[in-house]
Image (cartoon, rainbow, N blue to C red; front, top):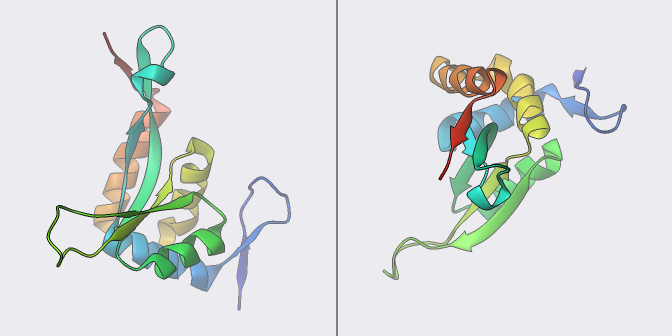
Length: 137
């Protein structure tokens, strides 16, 4: 297997290309790349900021745990339920919301993303690069 080196917290952290392609497919099929706003309670001087994030929601917890384990990024949280019908299966979320982690993940899976997700990533990273701020009251 070929390996690609991506700078992260530890200088010897490597992501496998096949695993990155698998993670990109997961994000492509089940996830989203979008901006995450800080909560007003976290804001200083009434200003909240927008940060890039990657999120995947699904009913297969093991798949999300594999993505988190392979990348070493984000957290898997849940289970959650939609509504009260017994037929609604619980679901989990893999959230990569730390700005440095989200940017690293987007850069790593970029070659494997389709045009639609690349568009989401461009818009999200463009807003982040410009330092988008949201004023709250």
